[in-house]
Amino acid sequence: MVGPGKQTEAEAATPLKDAVREARIEAAERSAVVVDLRDAELARLELLNEALDPLFKDIPDDVELFDRGVSRGDVPRLWIDVVAHVEMGRDKRQYRFVQDTRYGRAVLAESYDVPDMVQEVTRYVARRMVERERALADDAGRPLAQTVMRTQRRRNRWRAIRAFIYGLIVGIGALFVLALLQGPRP
Image (cartoon, rainbow, N blue to C red; front, side):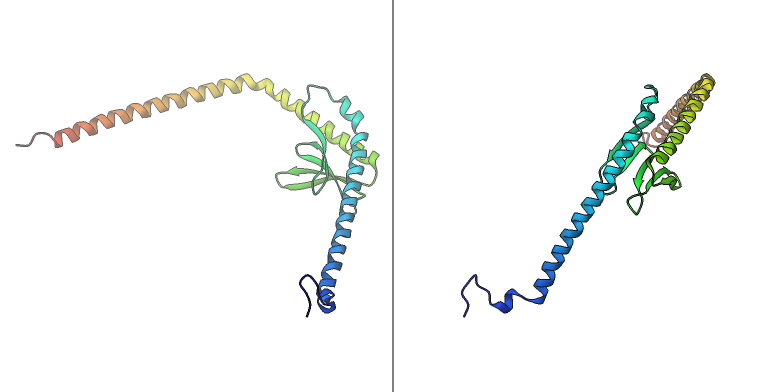
């Protein structure tokens, strides 16, 4: 007979318990490897971020298109702006510059070298700044658009007033007819 708190040799060393213990050890080792890989990814993205410093210093202060920073999630990313970021490829050594579009994610560039990625990000930033300039230049036609919008708002307001007046007339007429039908009975 075995006392409380003591196990026999057969109970202590079952194949399942040994397998579970080995599986826990393997899982701990894998998670350590995953953490090391994530740290390596973050370090590579930080290097690219530092290499991009001169580019972002050249951007005028009044241009607020870009919000650069490294996010530390399950997939670390170096964000360039709201829709574009750099992440590491499957082999964790290749940089992937991607942009989210309405049709899905588009890969803008892939490279193992920091200078190549800096050049691609520079091209992207330049294109975005040109798009901004064009959008601002299109605002030159804004007074005409504002006049059209004011006219449309005025029309909509008068339509609402007319609908209210017609509804009021119909409501009063319905009450009058109801009063005649419910009038004094002999």
